Length: 230
Figure 1 (cartoon, rainbow, N blue to C red):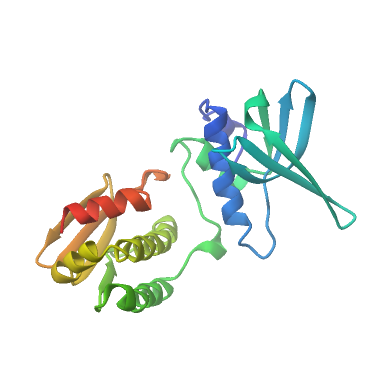
Figure 2: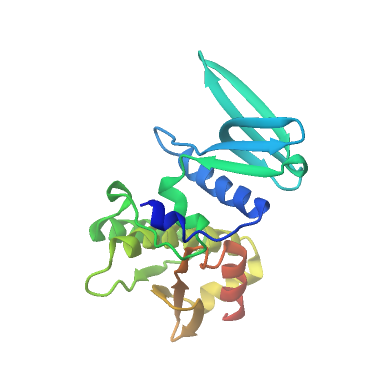
């Protein structure tokens, strides 16, 4: 929750890092039934441009912002290189992303899965991976006796990350064959460091939440780390 003391803990970020964070927020919100998109104002040589952040393309160096008036879209494509200042509003639920791990993340109650829901997610992921991997795979979350709401929230994200990563891995026939021959189960938990170890056909993975989800390996990093253990 943002308050004055919380605001004083925020570090300085480069504008391109701020835009990456805004893209992450927008990608999450656009999936919601009632998206709560961040509001931004850009200052450049021609003045100030304001609106809702929609998309950012780093390669093209362009940011798309928009407003909605009388059922009409007002869109502005802004050159990233012309931006001298970024002003943010409507980001109280995402201030932890701007804090570089200094401010803890607290998920909204409706975003926290129950342990039963997590068990269903784990089972569903295993079923979904049967076809691409060509085998039955058990996925287990070592939650401990009383996982926090934050851990349960991130566990769901970790399940999705594992599923998406293994689907990509299975596209490489050699990697798929090596995985199928050596791994029968995956166990994951949260710890201080990202680690992967294969023992007795069980791939044991720890995800670091030191800086929230920013600390966790991305799909490419996770895939490479898994393949090194096969």
